[in-house]
Length: 467
Ligand SMILES: *[C@@H]1O[C@H](CO)[C@@H](O)[C@H](O)[C@H]1NC(C)=O
Ligand SMILES: *[C@@H]1O[C@H](CO)[C@@H](O)[C@H](O)[C@H]1NC(C)=O
Ligand SMILES: *[C@@H]1O[C@H](CO)[C@@H](O)[C@H](O)[C@H]1NC(C)=O
Ligand SMILES: *[C@@H]1O[C@H](CO)[C@@H](O)[C@H](O)[C@H]1NC(C)=O
Ligand SMILES: *[C@@H]1O[C@H](CO)[C@@H](O)[C@H](O)[C@H]1NC(C)=O
Ligand SMILES: *[C@@H]1O[C@H](CO)[C@@H](O)[C@H](O)[C@H]1NC(C)=O
Image (cartoon, rainbow, N blue to C red; front, top):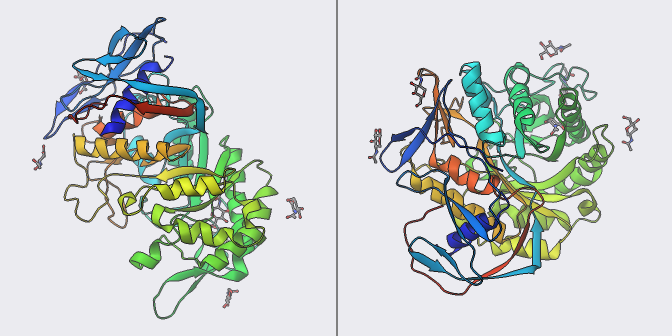
């Protein structure tokens, strides 16, 4: 809980531009409210520059405040707010990581839900995330081919088989109809450059060999180069659509199938093969891709996989030359101490660490996949993002930007929650507490912010979290 207070001050110190905001149109659920948007109405939030010597505090609360602004004087040593008192000692000279950004993912499902709204409501949804009246997202993750959040399974260049030259590589209807337009709309609404990152879930079937006993699928080593070319090709085709790929990983969650024996939408890699792939194929190919400056990220799996997916791989001579950063996911973070991240950045200060996937409602024990108004889930987001920032991460990217009332569509029925739930039938969308949790970071910690040292001098009692 103590961390949350720091955030308040961080936000208060932010340099903020004025116009009247449209307030949340609340709808009460069990725990807290969702803010309802439709074709004619949606809440907004602007950043205001506080007068010299004053602060502006933005508060979201369980009782229903959403980016509610309050104003007050700065004091020399103390920072007062409401009935709490807190004293922070701030060391601006002690600087840590530089922030790259915050954002969400444009999956097929996100694009399909977005397109299920009228054009006016679609615009409100995009503005809610990407514009200066919204959360000012600056990063987007887009899956290369299908994922569990698609209505079918597909890869590019499935046919002809064994086509190592990728002569038939074209984007899928899902890219053209949903993902590309949604990313383009966000890029247009955003004031900053939106970094787009990608990862492959499943390559074309002909690139895989099936292990007889387990039924698990490995990438055929004969096709390592074709697979690397596939990544470059995807970046080139998106580039033709005006979307420049900022970074990519070798594969999404490569260790997942070991844990769950997933047979679809996943591929498995031994550490050795993956290291070879980085060194001999992906690295040289991406460095030589016509789309320049694509950052290559290792891991792209849960925090607990880092020893296998980064430490082991990086021991192979020459591999580190081709790794710019490390991507981690949020699931089961509580199983591994975040100090593992600090150790990584200490040993490899030139490699950034980025959180590339997160969502609520993913646990088998989560009875409600979509839990409207859940404040608990907002707190989970906040706690994880703060922890990641305190351990040197340069950004945090959420999973599906919007899902339907069930938490899909998902062709494998892997329903989960999202900060925006689209109710196509009623032509409205609901902004969950997690949406505002994301915004307290994405809006107020812009790209190139630096984390500085701050110590809390007067502790206070835990109280119900206000953001
Ligand atoms: C929360 O509210 C929904 C509908 O508003 C209801 O179906 C659900 O049972 C409630 N859950 C709890 C835990 O009260
Ligand atoms: C849209 O939302 C506004 C504000 O909540 C409401 O007044 C209006 O009736 C809604 N429009 C429709 C068509 O539901
Ligand atoms: C190229 O791919 C499309 C599907 O994207 C497929 O219908 C077509 O048969 C493929 N062409 C060849 C020559 O395999
Ligand atoms: C494709 O390559 C595999 C070996 O990787 C081979 O068994 C198969 O016969 C080939 N298929 C065609 C149509 O060439
Ligand atoms: C997309 O996936 C294909 C095959 O799985 C891969 O070859 C290609 O490099 C990927 N593109 C990107 C930009 O990740
Ligand atoms: C780099 O790309 C060019 C053009 O695509 C190609 O001709 C060349 O062989 C590539 N070089 C390497 C080392 O892959």
